[in-house]
Image (tube, rainbow, N blue to C red; front, side, top):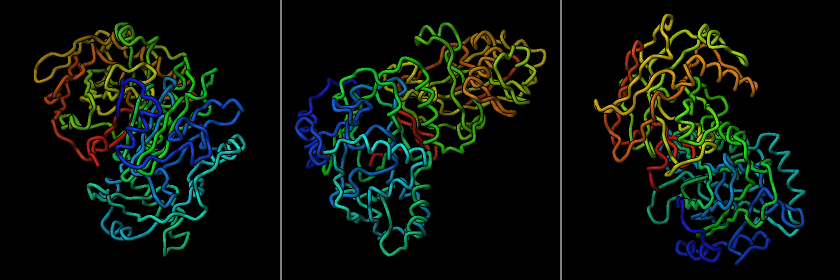
Length: 513
C-alpha cells in the first residue's frame, strides 16, 4: 500500500501496472468511457446522464476475485482512492494462501485437482436479501452501453492455483463459483460454503479504510476481496470523474471516490460493517472500550467528545500472557479502569450512582491497541477502525464499594520504566460517569449494556505509542486495584488477531505471498 504519494495520472498508473503484466483496458471492456481505456471508475455519484459511474455501481460486492469469470484471470490489481468520506466504505481482503494451507488435510486433498466453474451471476446467492434487491435496483441505473465482460459460459479454473513466480499454492474459489466439475449443484454449494467459511476466519482477513491518494496493489492469485456499500453515503456536488478505476489480466486499476460526510455517524456504521465482516454477525461482544475521555486527549486528537467501540471475546488474553509485536502495525499501550456489569444497564439518563449500582467488580486493565494508519489518523478513521482495539487483559476483580475510583492513581510502565501516569478522573471525570455516557450513547442507537460485559472506561494518562521495537514487559497498576502484566515479543503468533491499514485478522499482513 502506497500512502501520501503525489497523485499519478491515468497514463502513469497504466505504465506502472504494465510493469507487472498486460493491463486489462477496464473502461474499454466494460463499454464505458475512461481516459486511456485502462481505467474503470466507480463512484456514489451519477454521471452527467444520471447513470451510475462504473458497471458495478456503488453498492456492496461479495467476496470475489477480479475477472475469475474470464478464461484469463487477473494476476494483480491496483486500487486507488481519490476522494473518500471519513469512515467511508472499506475494501476487505482474504488471505487465500493461508486459507489453503490451514485447511484440514482431508479437505485439502479433496479440493486439490478440483476445477471450479466461475459465473458472475452466481454471487447473488451470497448476498443478503436487501442487497439482492439493491442490486436489481442498480441494474436500472447502469449505463445502457455498459456490459459485463462475460461470455455467458462459466470460466474453468483449478480450485487450487499456484502463484506463477513463487509456486505457492492458494485456494482459488470465490462467490462466482457456480459449481465444481464432477459435482452436482447441491454438492458444489455445500463444498464451496465450507471452503468460504474456513477461508473467512478473522485471522485471515484484512480490512482497509481508504484515505485520499491511497494506492493498493494486491495479488489476485492469493486473495479474494469484497467491498462495502457506499451508495447510501451523502453525495454533494462532486466531480463524477472522481470515481473508482479498475481492470486486470496482468494488472488492474481502480479509483474510489465518495462524498464527504461531516458527522461521525458514517464512521460508526463503517465500524459495524467492518466488525460484521471481521468476526461474523454472531460474534460475541465482551463489552466496550472508550476513547477521548479526557480534555487533553480530545485536544490532542481534535475530538469533540468521547467515542466507543466494541470489544470481542477473542481480544481478551490472560494476565501474564505473551503477545506478538509482529501482529501489530504500531503497538500502543494504555492503563485503564475496567468495570464488569452485574446487571443490564440501559440509558439514557444513567447517573454515576446508578452506574455504580450496576457494577459487580472493578479491574485494572492493560490494553494493547494498534494504530494501523502509518500516520496520524482522523477521529472518524479511528472510530471506523474500532478505536484500534486488539488485545486487553484484566487484573483481579475488586469490589469497588468504598473505593473512590475517580481519585485512584494509575501507572503504566515498560520493563520498569514509567510510560504514563494519571487518575480515574481521566475517564470522563470518573469511571462511573464514563459508564453512564456509554449507556446513553448505546441507547441512542437502540442498544444497551448486558450483565457480564466489560467496559474499559478510557486511558488513564497519555496512551503510549511504541517507537521501534515494542518488545518488553508492560505493566498496568492502579492503587487499590492491583496490577496486570503482558509480555510483548518481537515475533508473530499465527492465530493472533491481526489487522493492517484498516481492520483485519491473523497473520495476513506479514505473510507475503
